[in-house]
Image (tube, rainbow, N blue to C red; front, top):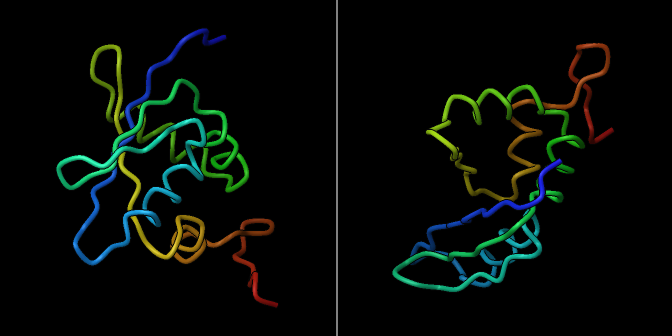
Length: 109
């Protein structure tokens, strides 16, 4: 069981983006964070990854996530990047669509 964890979440905010929309995307995955804007990015500190973990389970990408986490391990910490897009779920669905018995299914049917 994890009793205490410190997670630093950062997201760049480009000139073409609306800061509030980036903050909303950030808090969707890390709801306890309170994003603050500084030097072209939003930063938040959170102390749990429950919502993020729920999304990894729901999207069934645990093996991929574990691989990335272990590949980016440095001492007692690790880092990873999430790419921005329409929303993370849409990008994942496009790149690695849901499957049934290993065969991609059309979620729009």
